[in-house]
Amino acid sequence: MEPLWENGTVALVTGASGGIGRAVALDLARNGAMVIVHYNKNEQGARETLESIQNEGGSAVMMKAEISSKEEVDQMFCKIKKHFGTLGILVNNAGMIKDGYLLMMSEKNFRNVMETNIGGCFFCTQGAVRLMCAAKRGGAIVNIASTSGIVGQKGQANYAASKGAVIAFTKAVAKEYAHSQIRVNAVAPGFIDTRMTKANRELLTSQYMEWIPMERFGQPEEVANVVTFLASSKASYITGKCIVVDGGLTM
Image (cartoon, rainbow, N blue to C red; front, top):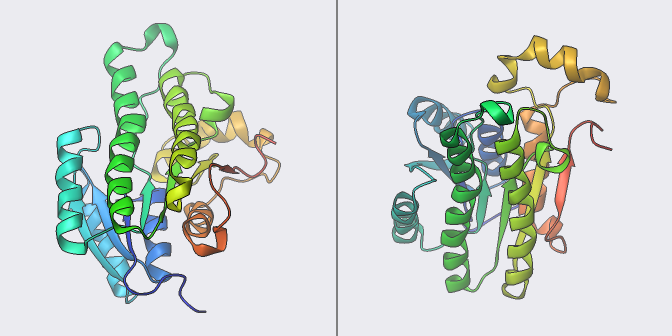
């Protein structure tokens, strides 16, 4: 199969140390992109992602940054500009969960989730759009949202709010930069089989499996396939959309 990208198209995947981020990084690399594997705390996981890409003959580098910090994100994008000149693809995947019922949720946990999930998306998108506009070659941005941001979820006032904000942010930026040929879309996964869900598998299965028409959790690769499509020229007339990948959970 012919690669989707040629001539060293550079893709930044935030939170690529595991789970959906790792699957996205691997799929982009398999399709010809030069992948920047972003991480913050999980260096070992990022290195495993890097090595998996390289073992398959792909190209990748690692970069560290706390995405809720504008200073660290700006420094990361300075490195990207210095080493690669521009950026063709951004996947805003990095995020955090700090669940708790409203009256038991601390201000710290609310702020941390918002600052990481939507604040980090904001900072990284600013950096990417600056590079894409300067290069005048367009680009693709894919933001990882969640079905929690569409229908809400008990115990996730902070997380649902942040992911709902990601979806609205996606639509606003898509309208602002469509004239620059920068497409901005979101993907909203449902219950995906990652380390995070494995830790609560029994509880999640008992509570939610009956509501999933396909009667299973999704695989990270199934999310990655949609991200790769949206980032490629095969989705050249799609922008401002949120594609749900949830086995029918929210239909």
